[in-house]
Length: 58
Picture 1 (cartoon, one colour):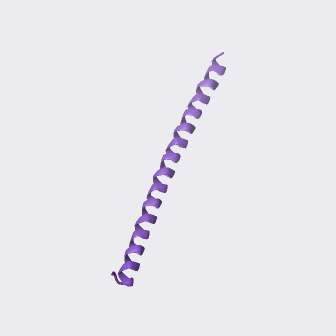
Picture 2 (cartoon, one colour; picture 1 turned 60 degrees about the horizontal axis):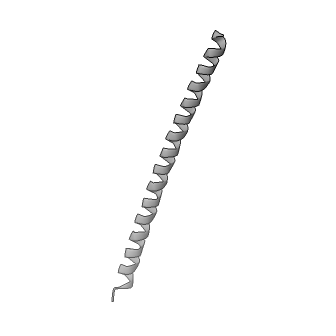
Picture 3 (cartoon, one colour; picture 1 turned 90 degrees about the vertical axis):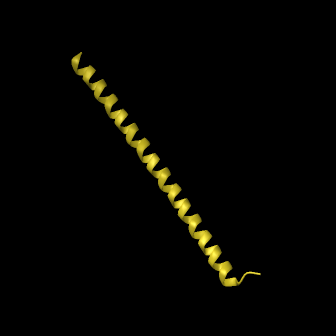
């Protein structure tokens, strides 16, 4: 049977890798959301500029 210290080290290492993977996944999701928000904001500002240009020309 394994020694308790080796088991503790293994579980700690696995938990550390799991937390690191979850943090990485969270950063990827946050970056994707930020890109989507930036794209939406750019689209809305462009649409607003087009609408205001048409009103000024009329």
